[in-house]
Image (tube, rainbow, N blue to C red; front, side, top):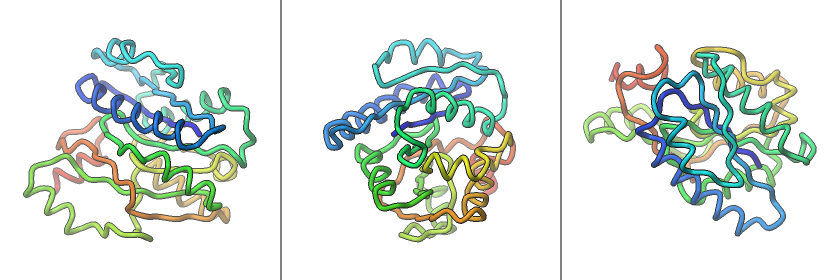
Length: 222
């Protein structure tokens, strides 16, 4: 199992993200003996202290990759390529868990991803909660159905089998919407897709994001 995390100037959010990811990795390693668990953090043209922050979190399961794409779709794809090189399992047995550097995952996050893989899913859609003030959170929740079989797609909480990812052509080099495009292609190519609300992640509630049209733009419109 490999975690892929794109990062663009997230030095403030990285300590919380990495602490939450470390808890999830440690729990998975203890609960899933024999399962390889690694993470690739992809620094995309960062000009802040993100690299320095990550350097203080050296772990055997964590690898850092630096790119200069300026595009989250290309950055996620670069992370997948790097993760592919680290794993020995076949694409059919390799699961990719995706989140973002401005996001904190629950301790059992990877256990739910492992269950999705074990249950035969090719792609799993998780849910998110914005870390925002109560009024904005209420407005966001009013527009989201947070239950099993929900219709939402969030790159901050998405898992895909590597073989299904390959069949779908991988992440397109899009500045936004790369997650939605991948889900569409997995469905089009016959992949088995599941969704549930059992492992929500907490993501940034900022109103100005790294790319126009992304999650922050949606929140700002509320």
